[in-house]
Length: 240
Image (cartoon, rainbow, N blue to C red; front, side, top):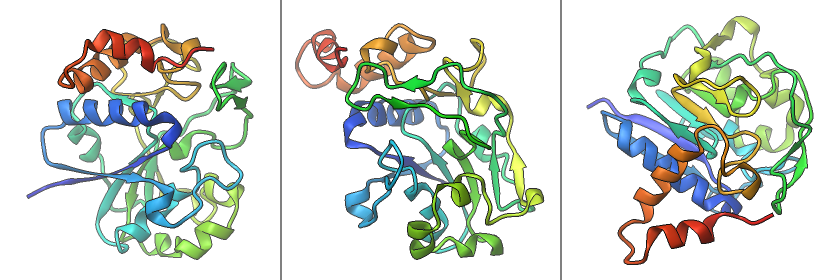
């Protein structure tokens, strides 16, 4: 049976964000999906190093974790699916080692996670946010260089700029599969929404684009715990 292998970036400081993304995946995906959180304690790997999120580097372990076989999808945890994930999975093309949305933009916001314990600089760099959604051809010969040792030592520029690959080994995905909230103009047809500046669990972003949809999935995730979900929702928002 066809199955999607989905690896999701997990940061314990954004556990609610991870939960919401998984809830949306479960709601909209029409075939079985295996969700694996990239949690650095379980991986015994420092996925943060010089980055902001705890999975900045561990995302490049996906081919290694797949034993360099088959296909897998990586996505940042601060996302939301709005349609069947199978439609993204069906875009796999064996001639590529990896497929990504090839963003070409300069940030409008030089701080991210405003008002939260994660607040940080938001700098521009080549191929920024390309690696936030990656369809990995894990069996491609060029991806076999991505060992645990190399990913731990290579550094950000080498990994985030896909320097282990040639340009023709990096395929392109449609932009609606990694819509950057707050960076691009609003898009009601986005299929994979990325809260790259800060998810609606942060007070500064709780009324932004797609925040209502995000809140809806959060309420669905917590509606069975025997407490007023709106009350839990109010406690979940991180106050600035």
